[in-house]
Length: 395
Image 1 (tube, rainbow, N blue to C red):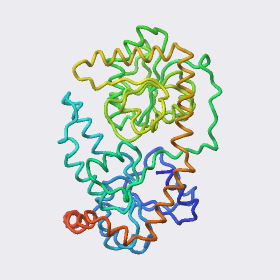
Image 2: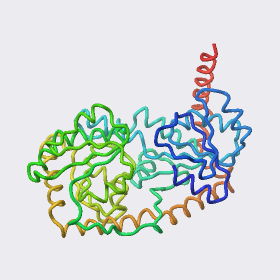
Image 3: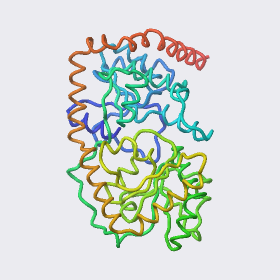
Image 4: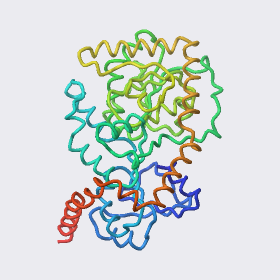
């Protein structure tokens, strides 16, 4: 989101960031970027007055839940505004994988056709353009859900390669393992638990002096209680400088058993020259035909969970001890960063799509009949529910 906001500011656009969320402890001060901030309320007609007065040319929704809440209001009061959905990742895909993992079974068609998926894909159809962070999710939307390609654009991480240099901290100058991720994000918490209960004891048995440093925002008591210096399992919490702690580590561990999108922790590891051990879900959407920046294994072999943990631990020990392999994977990471996440190229493509659609907005919408149909029917129910809640709250 910050990459998108700074891009829009650099185009000379007047940007207003409107959010119903409470301000967190680690919030970026957008005013320093010249962005106006506006607090808005859910299920409240005050937004109608706000958006009518603002009269934007473009409205960007952060995730499909915000499109559900405010999309019908924007369509009603600013019908000529280009509506863009930043999916971040497909929440329904992450939910489907989580359900399958909980029930120790493979994904099914029913998982992909869940109620959450219907809501999320409907929001994509209703918008003029949706930003899709992963090429895997782009293919899923086109092939399984039959979403027209002209309302989708592949938009992965946008990294500023002008400030990218190879790490000067060598293999020999690094030590220990690192794992990083917001504790409020369920796949991260599952990964920490799986590390603690299944993987780390196996690694520690082979590398008795090694430590695993766990970083992440908002660690709950159940996470800090896992802290155990005798076992070398250290829960550090919030990292003031994530790049610094990543560069000090020799290997990054990301045993992700479910999830969606692409992984910021792994992009950061590659940027910092830190090879990783992860899963196929960890690499998804980031390879784009290139070799991975570490080693991977499958942690969703439900019939052999112990074997999966042993494989992951063995790969972690191998990468930690094999300097030649470590250096090769480090170079793979640098190539991935430079080839797949060049901010300049991605932003040029995105701006070209936005400009093209703006110029031909009516024609663009005419080629999305399902989106028009959903605007006509589904958003009416969302509108009436919001109006009912507002009336109830005002009683």
